Length: 266
Image (tube, rainbow, N blue to C red; front, top):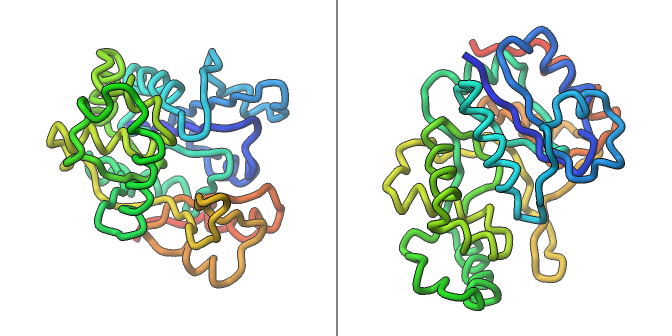
C-alpha cells in the first residue's frame, strides 16, 4: 500500500534535505509527483527526477490542471491516498508516523468551514468582486453548498474520482476555474453537492498561520525562516503532519531533522 505525495512548486523545494531524510529508506511505500511551472530555474536533481512528464497551466489558486493530471497517475499507480504539498511545505513527523496516520482508515483529510465570521466575510466579498461577473455562474452554482476549504488536501480514491469526473464532463469546473482562487471552494462544493462529506475527516493536518496583516485586502499565510520553541511546540501536535510556509534556512532543518528521522506513532 503506497501513499502519493504531490509537490506543487514554482521551481525547487525549499527544505529538500529535510524531505530527503523523510523519504530515506521509504521509497517503496510511496510515489512522488512534482509539478514545477518555472522549469528554467530548477536546480535540484530530486525535482528533475520526480517531475511529471509535462508542464501544465497554473496560477495563484488555479492549480487543478496539474492536480487532476497527477490524480490520474495516482489512481493508475493504485496509491491509497494522494497528499497535496507545496515547495514551502515541510514534514513535521517521520515518514512512518505519517504513513501509519494516513493509512489507519480510508478517509481523506479536507478542512472546511463556513461558520467562521472571517471566512463568511471573505467568501462573500470574493463572490461579489468576482463570481458575479462570470456568465451563468449564479444560475449554475447552488450556494447552499458554497463552503471554504483549505487548499492542502489529502485525497482518497473516491475523492479524486469525483473531481476527475467533474473536470472531464465540465459540469462545474469550467465555471469555478474562472473564479479567483477557486481551489478554496471547488473541491468542497462538489463533495457537499453530491453528499460525500463522509469521505474525509474535516481536519487540518497541515499547519498554516493565517494570523497576519492583510495586504491589499487579502490575507497571506505567515512565512517562517526559523523555528522557535513556541512554534516547535505547535508543530509537535500529534495531529499536525505538515506545515507551511517555510524558507530554505538551515535552522529549520536542524530543528526538525531528528523528529523527521525518529518519531513513530505509539
